[in-house]
Length: 191
Image 1 (cartoon, rainbow, N blue to C red):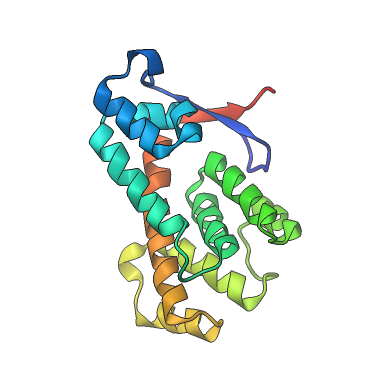
Image 2 (image 1 turned 30 degrees about the horizontal axis):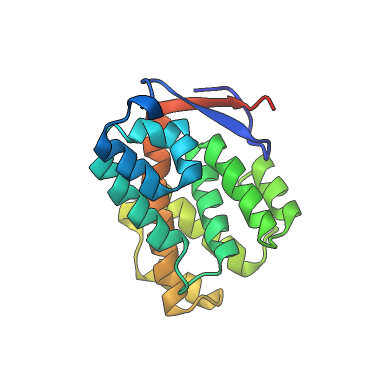
C-alpha cells in the first residue's frame, strides 16, 4: 500500500490486476459500467470491478440507495460517516474523497483537518463525535455493536431513521473500503 499520510489531496487509485479496457469490454461489462455513470466508467476501480459485472451492478445499486437516500442523515453527515470509516480502517484514498465531499456539502473543514491528523474525537460536537465513534465501532468491532450504541446516538440527537441510515452507510462503506484496499493502492494524482 502507498505510504501517503491522510490528506485532502486528490489521489489516484491504481489496480493491481488490469482494469477492463472500455474498448475491450463485453456487453455485460459495458452495461454495468454505463448504468453506474460516466465518472464510474472512467474510474480504474470500477473498471476493475467490471470483471464481475453482476457484482458491480449490485454494488452500485446498494451504494446509490444508501448514499443518495432522502431519508435519514443529511448528505453531509453521511459523507462524514464514510470519511470516519475510511479514517479508522486506513483507506487514505476514500478518506480524501469523503472528507472533501463533507466540506463541499457545508461541513467544517477544520473538523476534517483535525481528524486527518488524529482520530481523537474529543473536540467534536456531540453529534459528530457520536457518528465518528459509531463508525469506529462498526469498522473495528461490528460484533460488539448493541443497544447501548443506539442509545448514545439518540442522546446525541439522531432520530431512529438517522440511526438506521448510519448503520447502513457505515456497514456498507466498511465493506467497500476493504474491497478497494485489497484490489489496489493509490498515489498523489498529477494534474
